[in-house]
Image (cartoon, rainbow, N blue to C red; front, side, top):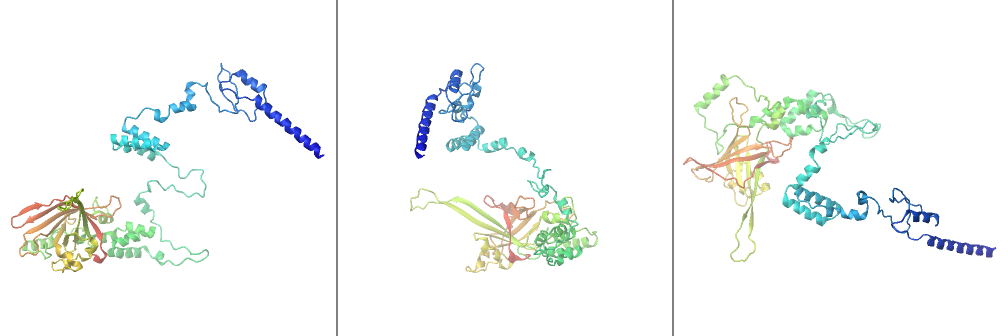
Length: 507
């Protein structure tokens, strides 16, 4: 039995070997340009190929034949020229490097972007250099051509399609550019809301008590009123607690009227006329001043304090937009500039030295109409806590931290644009500052310094904090003996920026 099985296996092996040899001899390599007749003979005379044939389209007098080649790849040599780009040979002829060389800056930039995407960083860098040599702003031209602003704005995104699941949250009120609802309408939608109670810490347990949610609106307004008198910044933080408080803070104009008319942070503390001398002493009162004061208080009808106007339709906007000085901090100007230095005569140097000069200007305003001005190279952290009226003298010992105040100058200030006067024609926001001169400390000083500054906003954002920047308008020196004015150049000087100092309190 075992011998018969071995003989059958040997016979099967010989038969299989003959079939393989016959198949190899019957399937020679077919030339690339085969005729229809040879194709038919290979299919009829020889055996079937080992895998399924793939169609090959060959144009021969309107007839299409299917051929198969197991050893070589398919090459379509007989297609028309318009389809020749499908082969490798023609594709190499239309490679981007063989196209017309760019001539303009934009064409060089486009070619550089294309080559960078293909991985040819060397060619891309060369085209970038040529583009920027022709036009330094070519990147903007490329952006406007390929990514115009109107293209992104015109695309509308359906955030809530009709076939969306009910579990998908409604995001129709969201936008790529922020909320489309005006702030006034958004605040008005909070009118009927109440202060929400705190949620229960665990399920099926009573929530913790929230007494403030049961307080009537009248009492809440009174609490906000006293908070605003203490510090308007605290009132702004309360508006971030919940929607109910945000509505009360934004709509209760009586609170903001008290803030505007008060002397703590409002315009009652502003001086629109000189209130003292340069040294801080009271101004001498004349008979004419007393007569005008009596005339105003007896004969003139009472006028409304801080009336609203189209520029300030509400007291909240008046407090945020109308120019006013801040007393709970100081204004600091940091000046940096570079000037060439001199080489040492005893050393041979290849490079000329450069000196970086840094100094600071400080201005602090007080509620009584006086101010302090200081020019020094000492950094702010070593100056601001000593910038007080008590230290405005020249008798500080050299080793004391307050010795920097030996160079401080006393002065006075006033603000233009009196809101309490109907005849005022000055532009709002101009600050006039007069300080002592270079000969301070002498028995008969003859110089006075005069500054003119403009109140501005440091940041460009619409909701940024206002009145935090003092821009230079002019700086002069006045000689009282000769009645001469000399102007200081402001080539390197920079604007003042307000910094809050907690040790000042409310100023």
